[in-house]
Image (cartoon, rainbow, N blue to C red; front, top):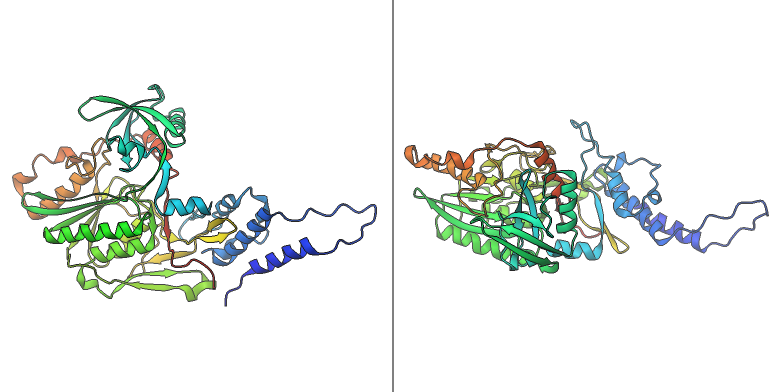
Length: 461
């Protein structure tokens, strides 16, 4: 059975609150105030972490849970105690806490905002990176690739600088309303007022089949492992049935902004993608700390459908994280995996599950995942095999978008030669790196969810 010091803490708190006061002399200091409800919640959160945290034995004994303003600050503090062999700094950048109502909405894909994310193409060129179809922006027809030329009448602050970033975040991400002037690809401009509203996210951005030089290529843009899982699984069934009926030769899975989510969604997608030869083979192993070694679990492939392809192309960015990287890692032993992008993926081979504490959930990192070959220490991310830029001036699925063009270019080179490849080089040219733009885009994506969540473990036993 597991040790849970939390029960001792709760009993201690009750004893403090219920015990009789000892007579005090006039010179004695007044007794300390009894612990508040939030104090006891912090104590509980730390006690759980001392048991379940992957690096539980690194948390110092004198860490004072009550010194932190809330549970999220406490979870962020324990990140400092996550040393891994081969890494000079703590590796945990993800343990967090959140109120239950917010998490229940976020994890099921229900959000309330304007519905757009933005990205600098260059220092003065701000673009729509992605749009949720059911959001206020999506319902007004905004598309990925549109240029933003003014926000609330201000065009001067749309620049890759600290003041510019703060202006953009405050007026788009943190605002309930914004009037934005967009420039479309045909250079027409439109000014729209977007009012924040609640809507259901759509993780499957685009699925299609291209026939290029006689080669059939399936393309799936999948941007979150969170959301309405029934809808996601229905989409998978529809998409892969289409890919089979079209007899595709190759497949490209676009995960460029996919920060992860549910492990069971990864399981499902992996079972569609893996060749039949992997059926009943080890997909992955989940490993907990020494106190919870009996929770270690092995997952096996259970092939879905008849799609059998020799290789797979993944489009990634540094925002491709967690469950997305888990998918890549799990497939690598069973098929050729080609990674397309400019920079390594995010690097998060560990996960957690929600632990209720009062009306909050805490998420201390609790397990690591490895594939059938025992590999899984990818804290530095997956390095691209094919170097290509994320060309945010193009909409999803545009054959001239650099990363998609680079994947297709290699695919065609495997099947065709000579003149059929001519003219594609300009589509995949990698522009020079602008450090200010990179820094700005990291700041704009800083609060996007990145996680690997296993909902099979909802409570301690």
